[in-house]
Length: 438
Image (tube, rainbow, N blue to C red; front, side, top):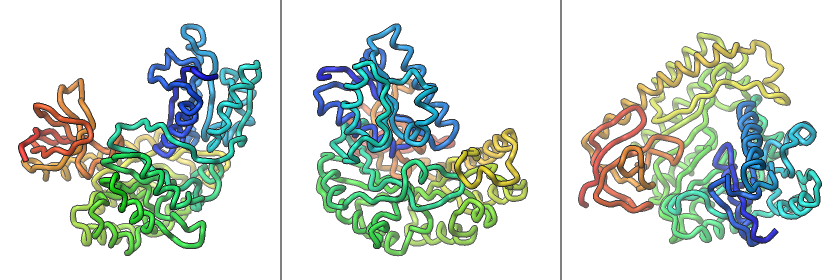
């Protein structure tokens, strides 16, 4: 197996990305290489997402597309790993004959033993055969931005969500191991903490230790800034807010998955909190951290959602004034409580509501950005945008590959460095400007 060329495709969220980086670490440890050109790969590993039906369809399409390289390239084996086989291996194994090996989540250590069997002309189901250890990672992001996955699984029982059925109960990774992993990542301009719910770190052991973890990582000299994603509203405590106020390494940015605004639907979704409590949290955060940037996600067309409740959510967006939001049409997932709920909304209605939510938020986001016109912002350079012929980067309120970007001109700029950029133009989600002398 030594010397084989691998291609790795990771689908879904940035938590999946970290899992894929562990797979790539295993590949490199075995003396093999990873290529970005799938057409040159002898073995293709597809790390799948199964959160929604659309994600499952995308995953299967990626397998079929990769399999096409058997006839016109050097491809020998296709490995399907991650959430899709973890949950649906019974259906996948007989149906997806294009795949040679199936692995579940946390099965990186089983990759090469399974491949050895596959090269003996077996089709291999190795789901659950890994030892669960989190080996070294092969970082796939630009060198200045890295992710740290602090836990797996989920305590929450949202009625629309498959994650607990796929990844099990919430398990926090040992703090000392996370601190050492963050140190081993080397010089990092921005470290992004991720989990299904970052704010519950440590609770599986009896005590919340999220802020303690943040403080430990903040002590590392190689970490310049820390961004927090997937912070459930009820987990944003006074302790966390105080830490954001006093810790200079914590970026004034929070991702708060609200999912809806209306009390009846929040209860049906299995979510905690009420409309009033969500608005009170937003107000408190803006009062205590005036420059904080807030983003959220919302589900449109949940079973039983009325036109009145949809309009109320539109009004909520205006009241909350969040910097950025993502909107998703409800996906009816088997093996979830919401699957059997009455009042399933027609697909065309769900799509229309998503469009209306995005249109409302676009106006809010555009208005928020206009205040930066003529201002000079600190922007980290992420690289070059070839189409626009300029550099691309992000201000603190723009999360990597999630929010908008800041495009800027400069005689020269180096990836990972921070530049002062004067904003000349704004649009719905992006800023445009030019670098200025310090």
